[in-house]
Length: 350
Ligand code: KG4
Ligand code: ZN
Image (tube, rainbow, N blue to C red):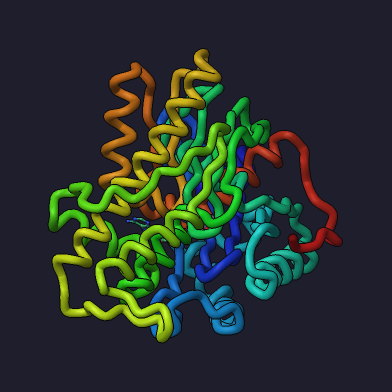
């Protein structure tokens, strides 16, 4: 049994295609925040959705319904606790796929009602934005770039639970751009990791100089990039618009060049927006990079070098905390519990 003088938080995350449960408790006598994550168990459904080329909401929520209980049991076992030891249940309630969110939220509410636990409804994006704090003591204020499959935003992070959006995508998210363009050249879903692998094989060179866009604000736009890549492929005789078919499936070199040029382009866009953000908020001394796209090692390296040059500290979570995970939900649940910001049992999704 672990000591019980700080809240034990059970985090639940089912906003898209993962089923994840974590146990979190602040530990005494440590400056290493990762010691507070007592367990984090994630069941990934990627294999279920691969053959459809994207997440199928119905399949996602049915799988979550099946997995949520065993995943929770495993998380409790790994943390060496039982449900009775839990003080607070934290659950992602927005944004996300409605059917998926409902599985986690109904499960969390049922547990809270039956076991008489306090509950905290957590915004999934707030959890991503603070996910670099899971393993690092990230000083405030800092600038956070969140890049995932559904969202791309820049935040000015004031304090725990206190942050403001200073830029966001006006159309597609960066991860969506990776996934959609990967699909154009017949790569499997999700495309981001395949794009990275192909780009590495040609040393992350920029071959095709895709447009970086001309947004003056701190916002992002990626839908034009997808169209630019599409027309470039058509010009090269590699894509048939009528039948929506990639015609050069055996041309590995072309796929590598597209992947590498795309990764360099998106990284350049991120760097440019961070540079502008730093100019606008010069007092900020740290930058964090979070969300599924932040798994990308090339991107991490480039942003880390960018920060080094400007004397900024750089923080990014381990890959398992970049993609959707319940530890980040529990982390927000923990500080909200300390701020006495609990939810009523009648909160809704979205
Ligand atoms: O945060 P996340 O797991 O789910 C959302 O909340 O959206 O992000 C998933 C996104 C996908 O678009 C995927 O292609 C992208 O993260 N991603 C990557 C890499 N690994 C995952 N993008 C680029 N490079 C990667 N290595
Ligand atoms: Zn996410």
